[in-house]
Image 1 (cartoon, rainbow, N blue to C red):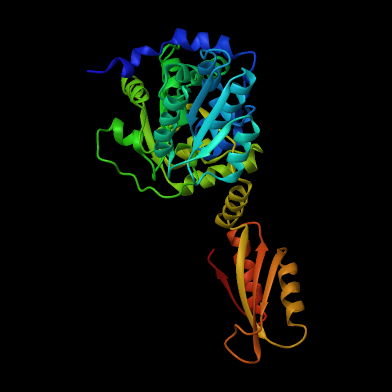
Image 2: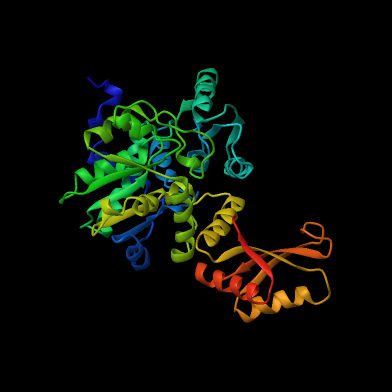
Length: 407
């Protein structure tokens, strides 16, 4: 029997409608667009909800604002977060005149710490993950008489996140399914409440990375299958899902799919190239589900929540380059040739005549198999894998020893 705190009926459609009215003057009503290109790729009709365009870069603005409106004016609040909830609480707390403190894991990227501080919060770095940060946050809440703002297991937070579902179903009333990332489950829980009250049946599907499938494991009543470690989707790297969120997802029969890190990376690159939009790993998880489970969504009208865009620029650069490499558009080629004048020019001409482009050259005269030979390692742009093979054959046709190298 559910405890009162975990009663799925504690968040209703009326709560979502109230939250929409309470936050409308500050939180963005984000665009929802149909993507013809992504639809063709995944075999479903794809509609994108751009929550990465919120002021702090994620949907967390909604729940944070709705919850903070209930805090006594002039009071203080505290939260634990690895980034997005932190920024939402810091920003809206500042707007409402509240003192905000955020406890973040010790390994939080500097850019997220700086952004949170820049939005007006006091930051403490404690713990290896958000669960350890939570213990410290609750200690400080008691010591300093601060109100604790949970990132997902809170009815007001869930109601705020659920306003996304209201907007999405107003934009596309005949959706078959809404897909969104799941960490602790606040977003998916809010979406499930919105979908359940819609005039026609709408399924909600959650998505987790294979390294942190805590909600999927909970809903399936199975032992943990978590791999742990670093993940591109750090925003949903939650080891313990919420009690209230789990109850709501269970009540509404929400399925949570588990996707690979590779699919999430591919989705980040696709959204950047096709939709010209930047998303973080969690923000790309919904699209990753369509890529890895095409049969589940085939022919359906699908709403994807791009829940956040706060990705570290260096990570984005790596993902972009790996995406090009996986598509055969960025290649590493090793060429061994005689160490005499003009040979580098010859290689350059062969590649140019094959309509490819050299972006980097490493010339190692000591790494060859003979004293009179030299080694070139090149990075080249090509149209695709077939084009890269054509370049390789052109080099070999001139008597050069050449091979494609793995990334």
